[in-house]
Image (cartoon, rainbow, N blue to C red; front, side, top):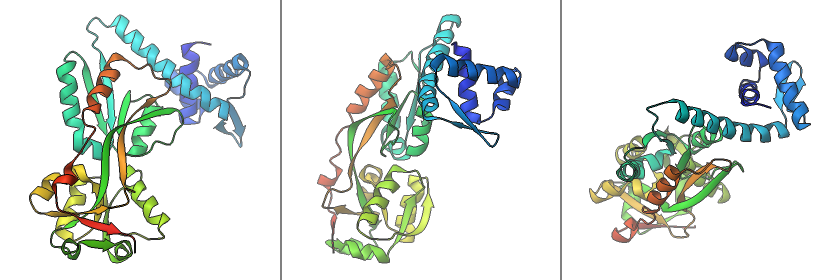
Amino acid sequence: MTIRHLKIFIEVADSGKMSMAAAKFFISQPTVSQVIRELEEHYGVLLFERLCKKLFITEKGKKLLSYARSVVKQFDDMEEMMFQANYVDKIKIGATITVGNCILSDVIKSFKEVNPEVETYSYVNNTRDIEEKLLRSELDIGIVEGKVKSPDLISIPEVNDCLILACSTKHSFARKKTVKLSELAYERFAMREQGSGTRELFERYMMENGMEIKIAFEGNSSASIKKAVMENQCLAVISIRLVEEEIKNGYIHVIQNMECDWDRSFSVVYHKNKLVTNEMKSLIDIVKNYKHADILQRIDSGKLIRG
């Protein structure tokens, strides 16, 4: 079993076709078949089931794929380090959209102050996408507000956060001390896209309470969500960290869920097979400095109650 075996196996698993792997590595399709067969014989397991001329990876194959991505990534990193005279250490950081808008820039700035020689790359998208890139070893580490679902990822809560119900200061809710949960059924919501950790948490809460959400606007930009709240009288459930400026300027009114059902954390996430580098350890230490947000203690807000 060689690194070449693993690279070919990964390509077959990703594309689902031996012909695609053959084209990528400039080899014949029978050679790809032989490589997969050699891997199966080496480990004594079936890696793919062949049904109706299609390949379906087995559970054992999925486990090998998880390790193979990590091994190949570390091998490629080692080769680059040893053969490139001008090699520099790198770290690829993924962040969800809420995290990207709240703390990512400050985190990277602090990281560069401590590690000026390290090259950083950052990527922002929703929780589902960050999770997929971590599993494919396309990112070294992630900072997410949603719950990761894969058992192959380690998730460590590091930063306290909470969601609030946001409305315009011109909305009728802004004049109420308390808002009943049942009143939300008649309101229009601005929502994040599918795959967002924020959306998932709120949808789960409403479903558990037997409530439907009337979606009037949907998007992956925090700025557009806030604009829909301020200008179009939509409601939105959003991180308190994202609306601090709008609260100060009198554009957005905050309604707290008093049962703490919307309390959550930003978590540091990385693959369980990932070698935790010094750069990753440094980033984790920096993220810990953003643990607390006391914004709610400094503002007047309404209360969301059941009823």
